[in-house]
Length: 315
Image (spheres, rainbow, N blue to C red):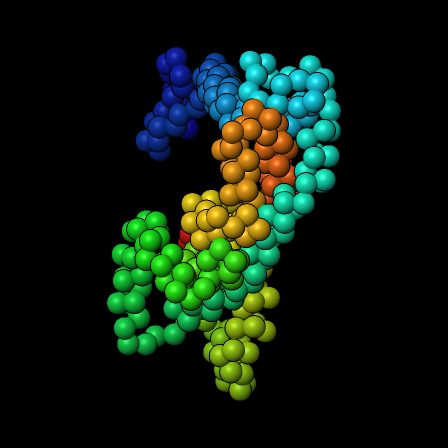
């Protein structure tokens, strides 16, 4: 076998004259240059991500620091410094002593928990039906829901308010009224859950059906245990929506402080004539409101990501 070898800056070329084969052999210089290039690219990406993280976290850091600024020894309003001169728990003491804040917190927690249970059952049931069953009007229904989902929800706000008012579900009845509105159209959010169910083999359903299992039994005993990521994802989404809602909740509970959720109540604090005194207490309330959502994401992040990525495979 006769082999000739020539060189260019990036690769060595070996020519096998008997077999007529040309092989490229990458030189050490080329490999080192490529490795250095990858290091520079990665360093640039990490730098951009760090800067973005700092910008994203800055408001939260400011909120936490201001919550520890005493409204007794320092100004209770906006100041031109971030780090408090004197750290104090006065704002948190005020929240625990003030009965209204925990009334609002309890209202929000009740609404969020009830909606999480009802919406999860409705969304997963609709998703499973659309994933497994084939019936007349199925495609039309999915297309209509898709089109309706493109319209922002606040377009129906006035009509929904007057409807709830006629039913006595505003002000004193704001909590059941909000639960009704949040859960009424929850089945329209079936897209990701349906995509996740599409990834589960239908042969499992068919085997269980042959053995005499009903659709409901297949759903609860076979599909649900295999769908833990999408169940947790659906619960989290159903819990978060009412937890942070302000716009519609402020209309339904208008003028009735006992029916406010925590977002409306905190806004009323800083929207009063005593704004300067309530700002630091508003920051402390914001920290307490963020704790449940933060803990949910910290402990359930794995399932949240699996639910999103699993539901995006098919649709």
